Length: 369
Ligand SMILES: *Cc1c(COP(=O)(O)O)cnc(C)c1O
Image (cartoon, rainbow, N blue to C red; front, side, top):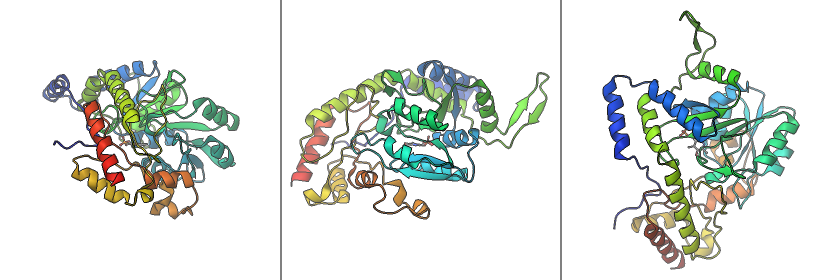
């Protein structure tokens, strides 16, 4: 039986040939392919301004800089995400203020957000977890009421929609990731979507050494910008991926419908379905102690059955870095429970529905034995 990983990118032959062409062209770093990729991704998010980056982590960090967030400021963010989300807040010297997530959606609890706002709060950094949109109406109502910036971590949400509107096509600053595990890839890469052309100009400086040119071509350095520009090689991969994105996401949806129909183990919390879900991940919560085995044992047995299982993610506030801020066990019960019970099952466009049946059968056999 072939090994079924929990995720695997698909790059078609046309894209591979296109990359070879870029490599032979002599122009490898930022050039025409980056411009083309940004144009095409902008069309995908309803024509908003798109700036590509070498990673979403870089895009998020620069977004915080753009908002002028600095030491002494607080940014509200969920206790359940990948560690890049709070890390970038630390990197600009601000304080991540964690709040719990909802158990059913695994998204940031907006009641908790309102309670966490202080005079030092500058921004909210929510995550559309696993590809399910946060309640954007309520999120932006809170932000507006309190004069806060919103930096959406949409790493999981390429193709996600909120009430029929695609994530990235509206809102404040929206960051996507094109890491190979995400719904589409540029190998490494990310993008920020925004509306304000003045802020877009500033992003260009923050993204590339602070360098600007006047009409005569004279260079000037306006600020100590960083180095986050995407390469043309990476952008060409992204162009090839964009051509398949709708099809990739349709396949993810179909596979999840099969998972929801096929999963036969009781007492597990399945992810909630939604019309606008982009299904970056399918991750049930399994109360392992009830089944008399640990998650580690479950994952090892799935591995023996040639099935890869991921963990996304341990609760953020229990990592050493964040315990040093004073967080500890019991602070965010939902994030902690997700952190203990979550398993990410195989889900990627190259999979077949028969693979879903195999995963569900193996999990049922292991948990019920
Ligand atoms: C992957 C991911 C990131 C970081 O993306 P990179 O492109 O790898 O920097 C940030 N936040 C979340 C929630 C992610 O899953």
